[in-house]
Structure formats: structure tokens, C-alpha cells
Length: 69
Image 1 (tube, rainbow, N blue to C red):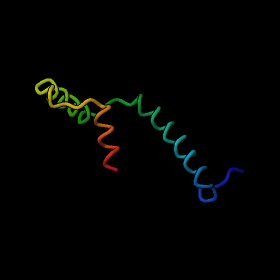
Image 2: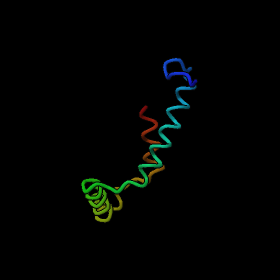
Image 3: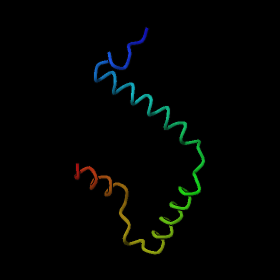
Image 4: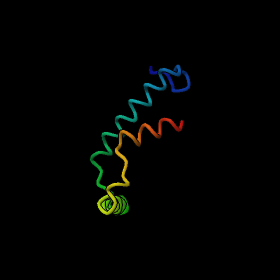
């Protein structure tokens, strides 16, 4: 019998949620984009192409977000 979520330790809960998230993420990768998502990506790409100097590389953006926490 598996322990219920409430009976799991915090570490066990974290591992469980991470495993669940990994399974969901794997499924999402195969889902098609919605029309709104595709339109947003197109808008962002057009904005980048029109203003490439205003973009920020992912590594820098990620570090900036981490510093905000």
C-alpha cells in the first residue's frame, strides 16, 4: 500500500510532484499549440526581428529573474 500524500514527508512529496511534473511535461511536448499561442510566438518573433538589439539572451534573462527572488 502506497502512503497517501498527506502521510509523505516533505522530501517524498517534492519527489512525487517532480515525477508528476515530468510526466505532464512529456505529454505537453506532443500537444499542438493553440491559435493564441502560435499568434503570440509570431508576434514575439516579429518584434525580435524588428528590434533585435532590444532582446535579452535567455541566460541573462534567467539570471535577472533569479536575482529578483
